[in-house]
Length: 196
Image (cartoon, rainbow, N blue to C red; front, top):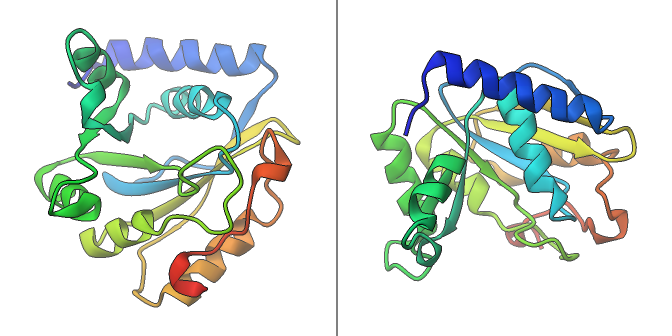
């Protein structure tokens, strides 16, 4: 569902006020691309979703994110869809990457936010779906962050994956090297299973 300009502006002002009152500020420019995969890291707390939504709304970006299809039932279905949820069948034979590549092909605008750690607990590698979705859909990866040490949420660089996973991940590692999650001890190494 799309909202009119007035609602987007009001929601943006409310989100900006929420960030201001909680001591957060934003930095960087929202992506110009109408379709992109947004890397959301570090992800070490339930608070990350709230700040991610507020950050996106404050710059008038409509963040979309994947959720298990099984939660889209009854009155929760329209609620999660309006919040930005995209139902995903994780055990579907086509796989999550293919489902999202198809979603990008069908959409005029899609800002897909992916926390590549996949969990708030420490992992020894990130899940690589975010990279493969962007690479196969030929859309930019946009690096974003919530840095709790400075209380700053922001946009970093963006780039279209080259297909050279190791070189592309060096850019990602460099960017996140100084970013601090709410629980720093839970932010594991920035690497993909294919690099191990």
